[in-house]
Length: 306
Image (tube, rainbow, N blue to C red; front, top):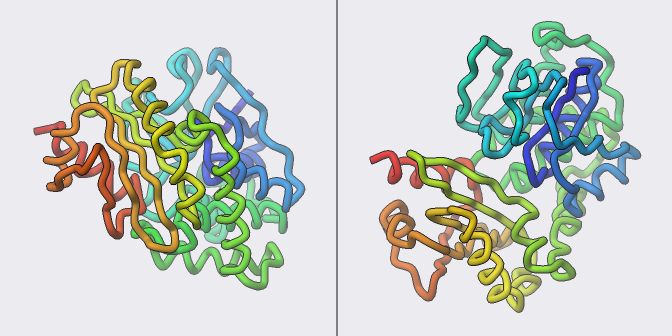
């Protein structure tokens, strides 16, 4: 059985990309964790069921979407058969056999899948050129808006904007910005969540030169939602740090201010040198920093690889 799955602690791009790609490949969409509030909102809006939760790759054929890091995937990924990867992140995986690998420096994995569809290239990846129905177009649009933070992120490209317009037309979304704000408001329900839930909502592990680094992120319209919980969030990060980390960062991204406050646990010297900054009480606001993929991971990897 072929399963298409995103990463642990799945976000909207991870879930929606898995669902749509599974449609074209006649596979089963899967998830490796619980849905966040934004993704729940999106699936409910377009009347799509959530993917099956899987915990093992054994006896499964697997296509990964929205990640290419083993630390972010199934723990026993090597016990399954990795067929391919569709992604928009850096390559962080090696394989013993050739696989299908398509990655492009765009704002979301949904953008890559959308381009394959509009170019009639689904057969190129072993799928079928089926019709993209309004509900699935809505999922792809939502994933693009989510990952580009409504086109505010530095990862946004002209292709993201162009395909979002096409998808919105199919999905029947007349005002992309208004719909995007609905999504962001759904995401900004962290005020009712426990600190551990907030930390794990969008959290990814990386390995840089043998060092384990964790980077979490929460995007909010109103930072007051997390302000009162910041100390408890930091305590949750300190507990997580005991799991063999060298460094943990947690980004509280202010969508309206277009920047992120970064909470830092562990090797603070590594963070300060990587970003050429000085921390103030274990945190700092980085103006203009909204993308973990493009603005946080690269300087950290560069530092650790020295």
